[in-house]
Image (cartoon, rainbow, N blue to C red; front, side, top):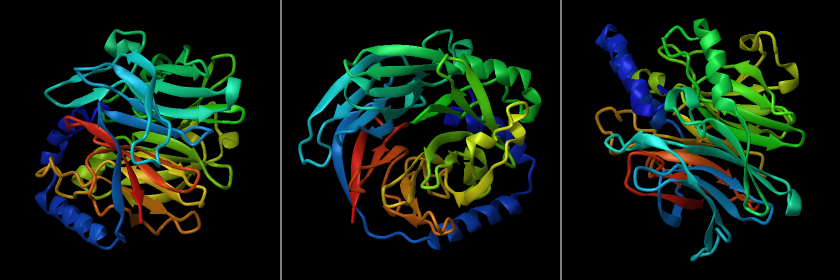
Length: 375
């Protein structure tokens, strides 16, 4: 499971040590200058709900309620909760799904389980889609890698195992990633729009579509970085109707400079025979690792950045997590919303009245929380 953060870093050290020290130092200084050169306005951070266990995916429902996926940890299993009134000072919270398995090492403090979520429909047609990370091949548990749907009665249905499919696909296409990571799978993000269910796999580096009959199609494979693969984590639909996919680019961001990207693509143009040749545009770049993304009703793109501290390898307890806002018509304009005041961030969601919510403390900390950002 190389898609876990610490396990992504360790295999890279051998390669990094072979590089000259000067470029690494230059890259670090470049990252510091990059951070200083981006706008960081004053933002009020309000805790909405605390005491969470690895909060990850966020999604707003049709009634303005906020759903949260908790991966869990060694003390509690995964769950999905609903915050009924996230703008209130004392919001009501209820659990709509529980007992979801997770896997991880309490010594590391990072766990994998239920991750991205997406809401579609209302009333009796309501569906909350949730993706379970990893795959049965690596965990020995058939629950991992499943795409789930929670209906209006809070009944959980398993639709298909995306992780298992992607693991087998990467085993057949090991040549796509020369760093020795394949086979691997870690379905991490899910997006449901009219007529389509998309899954972003951070391990396979793919955008998948789950068809109504339960079959799975690989729409795109995302290009490798300099030191490691791209690790896509999230997908959202832009004002133009196209898909925008954010990448983690963890290793390159740690050792070189902020390397996460946002790709834009039209699923209708997918090269199904050779998804590595699916046309896509690099819409935004030079970002810190993206762990979640969405568009607000204001037309701006928002991405949670796992960390923005250029010296994080020497200062791991101070990640300086953040949210970056990017105007749709100016993807080179990056505004950091919290001045690095957050911990390791999970997903980000924007309410119908354009208020930004973030899952904070998604890993490596005893307790996570949901916070609300305002100016």
